[in-house]
Length: 102
Image (cartoon, rainbow, N blue to C red; front, side):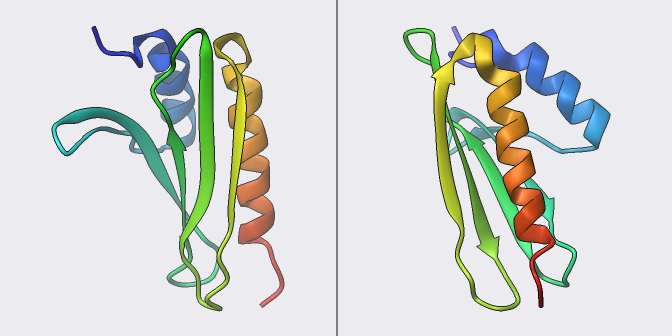
């Protein structure tokens, strides 16, 4: 069984609402991550969701590339029931990174 099945419905709904393309496999293993473009050319951010385990989920937002070579990363941990709140927190932080002063 895919360990992500417990969050896929929520993630798929949010992805459809926001136009994200969620990668669901990497190196022949289940994965869940997606990219968000920056406001500045070449800025790119990623949100990665680790496989849920024991009723918990870990989510990391990070910069992939930035015009000013700044590096950003933050991780959230919580129960699977908190998935939407964790995702909202990650998205809000990515939005602040996207809107930083040039």
